Image 1 (cartoon, rainbow, N blue to C red):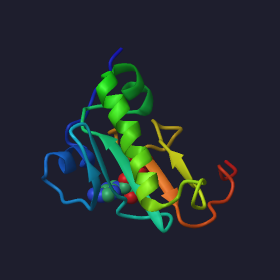
Image 2: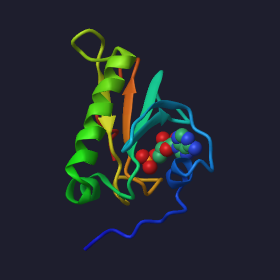
Image 3: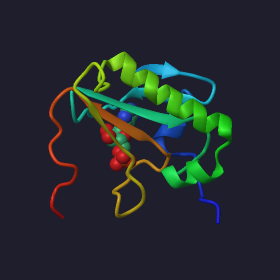
Image 4: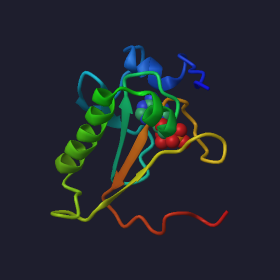
Length: 125
Ligand code: AMP
């Protein structure tokens, strides 16, 4: 079953240019911008321009071109931030989905967090 997409979500409004954003990189299929409430010195959100609700929706329904572009942009952001463990101190990627994932914005997005030690992966429930 296809996900129902709410085109009034805040990232849809950003993509339509109705709300400003602090763009880090933009391509035909993907937008990367700074999170408005950063949880680390570097906190960038990477989103597809297409209407996908979650990571699994994107993985199952997006075109090959969209998926490749998304991951290339992710890699380029890591290079730009200088956070790759190859030459930096590393990073964490997170994509919250649904109720248990505590997803606030129902447009698929991946958080890139970096710039300080990030602690263990999860807080105790
Ligand atoms: P979540 O859906 O739980 O993964 O979190 C949504 C993220 O979007 C949060 O980290 C918010 O700070 C961020 N966010 C919400 N509105 C904006 C905005 N207008 N510009 C940039 N980031 C935003």
